Amino acid sequence: MRLSPRDPRMGQFHNFMADAELGLGHFDAAIDEANKAIDAGYRIFHPYLNLAAAYALKGDSDQAKAPSPKLSASIPSSASNG
Image (cartoon, rainbow, N blue to C red):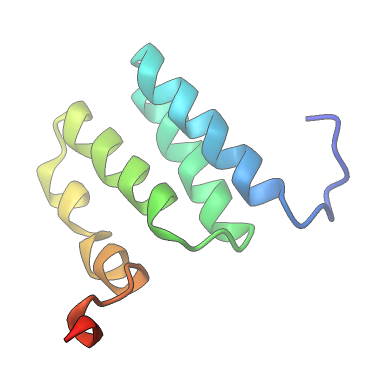
């Protein structure tokens, strides 16, 4: 990528790449990009969702379940709506 490695949105761009690789069926590349997004600080539910989906589509169900606690922790609770 021709962006600054210190760009605060680099994680988001890696997540976009994970989306694209997932859509193309390149599951290993999608896993790599989702991990890069998380490592870059982009810790909302999207990269965790991409990671779980890529592992599941790859056929590795144990790894697909691994990010689920982090995924559920990154989604805001709706219990405070009452």
